[in-house]
Length: 159
Length: 295
Image (cartoon, rainbow over all chains, first blue to last red; front, side):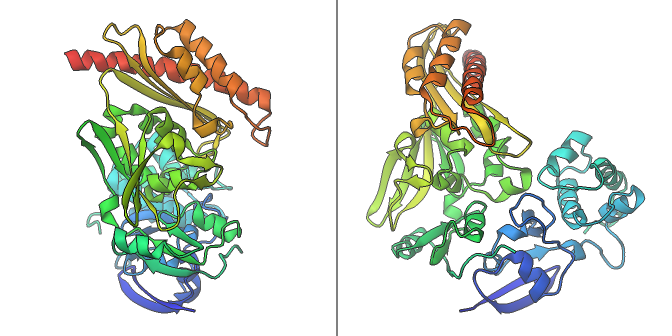
């Protein structure tokens, strides 16, 4: 049995017939081909699958695609605007905020959300914001620095 | 790869619609889904129908109303943590919410979902039990109310029957009350090894305890409460001696199980220490709140 699921992803409308049990992360990766969001622990611990649903970050391995029907999704592919990297993306480049890169899409989506609500977060606020996400390479130091860099270099024309 | 078994999905458009859908056997309410979906992946839960209530905005509220704090079942953990009115009446909920999972999970997980999941390690059950909250349950015939202390039948089991839906939690707000929650976990965002909730009401002299609520998380306390310690405290002085004695009583009467989070004696030690700390903090806050009331 399948149901019709339609949603806006990064401003584009998509509709697919899927099984109700399909998880949102697999809808994005396998049905839409948006493989920027990573499928990690499958237990909502690691946060590599974090995307936005209606403007709020969520671990997309723990939502059904059906739950996003009629809603707006934003993924890491939607951070860049008109060929300009988001300051968060630039920050991860400037401060070497990734090594293997597996956790990076989720980290950046959470970072963008944090900065939208707290444009000038201190280190403790940044660490709290990403406390539900796991990085096994960096020891988090450079991720924190990358997000601070983004806070200090806001976009001139934010989305 | 963890995938739930085949399941049907319906989106409720009203509470009445949800109730009619929930009349079917093997049906589960889908709210935040942050416990249910992982359990479905592991096939620990295998419902035939999911009723998604995320669209029921009328259940997503937090309000002070006629001497009660009312929390809609669909209010998110982040809503409770951000609620100034809840924090003023019951700082215990802010204490507890700060240590529920992580900030992303708190944006989606719901208050009602936490209670209905009835996980023995879940933090809010002890906090609501300590505050003597009441659960308001919508039924096909109307609604019924159940004290939170009678809400849980055991691990993962509640009094919610087929065709019923938890609608809100109501907590009586009384002057001169202070509250606190103290938790020990192995790492940030983890479940409790043990935790203690305290709600104290002091008399006008701010010395004697007129009402005491003590909740315990993850240590096998029946209905998440330490009744013997509460009985001991009522009428006694709000001082270190009373708190220390009540904490020992709480530690004696709970039933912690040895597991990967620690042996039984360690958990009893935590219960005593955390109960004393929560009582101390609750008394400080009760005194501070009384000062504000009279100022």
